[in-house]
Amino acid sequence: MLIGEYIHTIDIKNRISLPAKFRKELGKRVVVAPAPDQCLFIFTMKEWDKVSKYLTGGGNELSFLKADVRSFNRFMLGRASDAEVDSIGRILIPEFLKDRIGLKDKAALIGVGDRMEIWNDKTWAKYKENAEKSAEVLAEKLGGERK
Image 1 (spheres, rainbow, N blue to C red):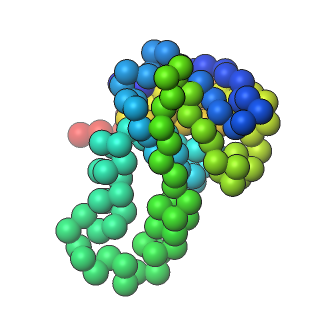
Image 2: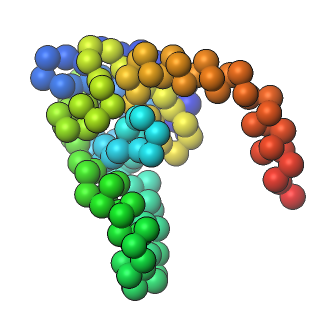
């Protein structure tokens, strides 16, 4: 399970070092994809296989007939990029994904269970501050949904 928060630098060639704690679990290849929030998702190849199958219908061959499905697939699948983890644990962030979330020289890498997220460090700080303010309310909502 990927958990924890790390701040890492992005080098001049758009490479970022993955947290050492995550490297074994992520493997030698990952997929970098845009997320609905102002961040990027990093999936293992195994998780990406699950996500892409779900998004493309998971057995419903005609899911592409739904406009919302097509739009979201274009957003996420169309802008996803696979990345090789190099010998010292770095991946290359494509320029168009780096620009999408305003990555400059530092990024927050967040483990959220089945995936890792990459955030602009300043955007993450603001998001985290807001989330912490509403954590009690969110916990109450989530606690009420379980059966």
